[in-house]
Length: 163
Image (cartoon, rainbow, N blue to C red):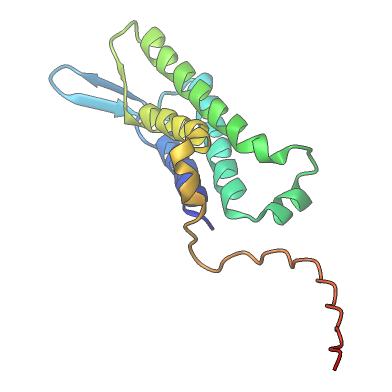
C-alpha cells in the first residue's frame, strides 16, 4: 500500500466517523449538540447513511488491490471511482450544512461532523491531482505488490572467435 492510498483510506475512515459525530450545535447558555441520527428527521439520516457508504467505499477502494476491485466491480474505468466518492462526500457535506442552517432558521451551527465529512471529500478529490504528491506513490507500507514479470529476454547469440 502506498502512502497516497493510505491517506485516502484514512480520509474514508474520517468520513465514516464524521457521520456519527455531532452535526448541529446550539449554544445559548449551554451547548447542545446532535448528530444526524438524533436530529429525528429523514434527510440527515439519509445523508449520514450515504456518508457512511461513501466512506466505506473510499476505504475499500484504497485498501484492496486493483485486481480484487476489478473482481468485485465489473465497471470500466474503475480507477475514477475514488473521485466520484470524494465528490459525493463534498455534496453530502454541503447539503447537510445548508439543511442544518435552514431547518433551525439559523439558530444552530453546523458542527464538526459535517466539517470532517467535507474535509474527507476534499482530500479524496484533490490529493490524486497534486503533482508534488506523485512521490507518495513511491513510499510503500507493508509488502510491496508483486510487479509484473518482464518478458523473457532473447538468448544471446554466441559468437565464436576465430583463431
